[in-house]
Length: 435
Image (cartoon, rainbow, N blue to C red; front, side, top):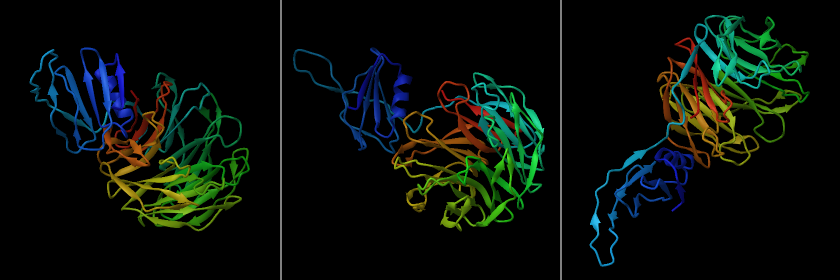
């Protein structure tokens, strides 16, 4: 026995089982007195006293054997136990999220970033609209509902957007990578969630992803861009007041699609992590100080890495790498062994053409979970962390056509993390509210 709960519904009982699913293998729910029993077991055969008014549910068991489960009738004299046949169900997940709500965006909505841009303590949506050559701002009107987008012109084919205060005025600004015009645009926040026209900075050919982090420890966020055709990463250091120096470039693998900037070797200097789509690898460029970087160290992954997230998923205080492998329909996890060195990836099957990955604790068990946008399956996959950095099979949620970017932020101020994504084929932004 793991725990007993009283005065609960069957749904509440199942939710509790899912919440601690690394330790719970079964539950028994008594409808007459609304009592829930949770059981821990690491074997496939479970022995338990069972009554006819109870429901038995198993979690994550590939095969279940039920032996000698009997209903005992109370009696002062000896009685012969009678065997009761029961039906069991096996569940691999619980519906953490409600059905999607969508909001119209521009043509081929491509990348989303979530942050409060008008200082009302509500998370707003910023979306890069690839075929509209603009960025849309959808302000949160409360309870996770949003106004129509306000569009701001940017360069050609904006493929990635980040929202960070780059001029130290306590208002988040928009930074967008324009794949068609080989540029990065910066739109400074005027206030109340409105923005100035863009300032443009040249980068290498076909920038597909951007990250904005202070990499030279001067207290000013800098811009990193992955340039898909040039096989480089650009670093644009912040010159102050939201202006930027010309790029410095670093060679990486073939077809860098995604860039993330996180300290992976615990030296308090953010490092660059890049997914090299064409060379089936993840590259690590360690920060040498002053915003300069070593040559990349390469780790092989499966076919078609397109998105990376860098988060400690096994609670050892070292940042691990999670990568979406588009061509192999998997998510890979590379554990950090220390000093910025990583183990070979462990892979988990997901949907068709996973194109974007985010990592956050969505079920409040203090273990980061994986969210993945499955471009070809038209769904979002959620892989709950089972402990020690291992993950359960994905649970999928149907969304719009060709979801291509995913972010995980509380959108309705209920202290539960929600999933927001861009549906590139539906020209909209979708939200799955956490139940």
